[in-house]
Image (cartoon, rainbow, N blue to C red; front, side, top):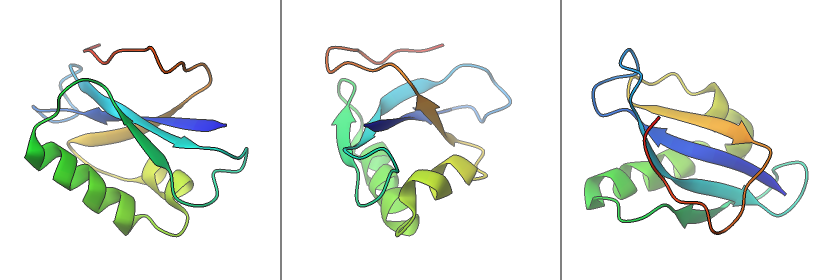
Length: 91
């Protein structure tokens, strides 16, 4: 399983504070196909809408294209350890 953590920076990435919106999970080791989204708590509708837009924009190689995305407000970071019980937060 491969996992990307979706991070939203409300004050741009130059500010180190971010919110973990959720995790994108791929069932295979290569990150092929469409991911399953596991939200971390409640997210606002505009943030969820934008995340869905980015996931569709990044097709067909969503796993790699999201990591390479240059954005002031979003980052997607591969994480090696993940469990369904994790909760979102700020760093």
